Structure formats: structure tokens, C-alpha cells
Length: 440
Image (cartoon, rainbow, N blue to C red):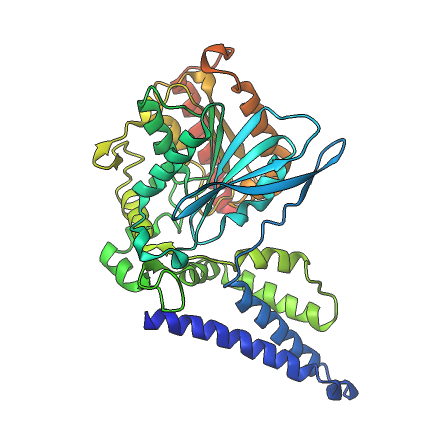
């Protein structure tokens, strides 16, 4: 707890140093000099203060309206279901006519807030009612709420799907992909449970060994004991979750930045120069990106460690041996939920092939209920919030939803290639893209 509190004190001190530096060098007395140093020092202070303040600030969704082809519609946000570690929130647009698509967006619990998917939500709202899993910062959850690991995460998704009932379409983004696949299988095993019409899996590590990256291979380089002793710490006294063991968001952020340290260093140096020249703005491209990127949240230690151990090290989902409460969940039971795989050719976190491995676990799903989409030039974030998502992936996902929006027995059958040929072709294509991306 002392280490956690010291880390928070260092963050606050760094923000104070930035604010003090900015205030000192903005003194009008320095305006008489022709030296560029006062402006540079003031700019450094401004950027430093903003950086360290944003680390502890939960971003706002900021979705007040949506623009459609014929009008603008106000948007309302409300809590649909409140749970100890997550709120299911519901975005609705006050349209002139109702929409038929109801979408559950399962956002990642991977160190950032669900607002990382803000652009995804905003792009879906003109055509869909959207529900989002808004995971809570673990440091704000009291110890009395109990533990939270991968099995609890899976049961949360199941509970939300049961709550939403029939005619729901699920989109899982990145980290929750394998666990959402398991949750869908749990519903498939219960004949009385409502099952999603479609399941779109975007860039997630169903099988991390299918095409390892530096991120997904991390679990193979360290033991669980090393990991627990090096990155897990209890929450300090200043927060509601005091004493809860967490994987701090600041540690996760440090590892993210270390992956592309030179790129981030250049971005901040350029921003300091822009501020000094008076060319920066509160919502310029740099601030819009880093205000979200720097805002991190703590993950429950049980969730982080069980994810590394069971999803990455032991590959329980990839081998179809994942258990919930001691009961094996058979993913091959999914037969009524159509599945679409989306991957990015330049994804350096969950590389092409890792998400595609989900189709190998669905031998009983009809061919006409399986689709794949590869965006060759898209990186990890681009497949759900960038231009590739807006221009190519989103229209394909909406078409997929419309194709399977009716009850299972009313869906039209379409011809498809034999499963073995289809998967072989997909995997060869993904492999070629992966090789091209690595060479680039």
C-alpha cells in the first residue's frame, strides 16, 4: 500500500512541477527578452501538467448527439445494469423511427477505460441501439465486493446477455474476445437461454500461439510467481478499494509506451514545440489521442494473473478446455449464433490468425453463419476506431448483422465453400499478410 501511495504522490508531484513551471515562465517579466527559452519552459510545464493529470482522470464519453443522413439526433446514456465491477450502459438516440439492430459492445478490461471505444459507439449509434460494458477501476471497488477473475468476467457477460434477452448482436473488441466466445458457448449449452443472433470478434487472442507477437508471447517469458511479485500491488489508503490487490494502470501504461518509446517521445517533443509557438489547441490531434491513451485504470490482480495463465500460457480457450465453476464449457456447442472474425494485417498486439483460430472451435456452426474480414493495412486500434473501421469494417459488420437479424429458423441459407477449403484459404491469406506486415 505504501508503494501504491508513493506512486500516486509522484504523479501528483509531477503534475505540480509542470503547473509551477508553466506559471513561473509565463510571468510577463519574461516577455521583454527575445530568448525562446521562457516559451519552451512554459510549454514543457503545460504539457507535463496535462499528461500527469490525465493519467488519473476518467474520460467522458462525450456522445451528446449523432449525425445521420437526414438529421441530427440527441443521445441519452443511462445505466441498464449495475454490477460491482461493471456497469452495463445503454446509449439511445431519439430518432424519428426505431432501429432493428440492438448491439452489445463488450469493451476491453485491459488497462484503459471503455471510452477507448468511444468512436466505435458513436459510429454505430446512427444505425443501432448500443449497450456497452463499462468496467470499473478496481481501485474504486471495495474489498467486500470479492474477487474478480476470468471466470467472473465470463459470468458477467452471460448475465448481461440474459438481461438483454432475444435479438441481440454482440461485438467483442480485443481482450474480451476469447471470454465472450466462452460466454456465448455457455448460453448455447442452455436450451432455455436467449442466444445472440451474431457474434463479431475483433482482433482478440483466441489462440496467442497462432501468430505470436511481443505482447502475446510475454506470458511465455515469465513465471506466474515473477509476474505477481513484480507488477501486483495492493491499493493505497486514499481509495475505496484500499487493500485490494491490483495490476496498476500506470504499470500497464509504462509497458505500452516502452513498446514505441521513440514514437511517443517524438510526439511529446513536437507538442511542446507546438505549444511554444502557439500552434496547439485544447482538442488538437495530440491531445485528443493522449487524453484517452494516458487515462488508465487498475485491473483486479486475479483477473490479470488468470488471463495470463489461462488464456496465454495454458491456452485453455484455444484448446477448448476452459472451465467455469469447475464445469467444462464446450465452445463447439455454438450452432445458432453467427460468427464473424475481424483482423488487422498490421496488428502488432493480436496478430492475424490469433482471432481466426475461433473458427477451428466451431465445427458444428453452418458455413453460411461464418464470415471473416481482414483489413490488410489496419493496426490494432484501427480495426475498431480508425479509418479502416469507418470505411470498411463497420459496413461489413452491419451487413453481417442484417443478414442474421431474424430468428435462426427464418434465416436464409446461402452457399459456401467447404469448411476445410475455406479455413485453409483464410489461414494462407492471413499468413501472407502477417509476413508482409512484419517485413514492413
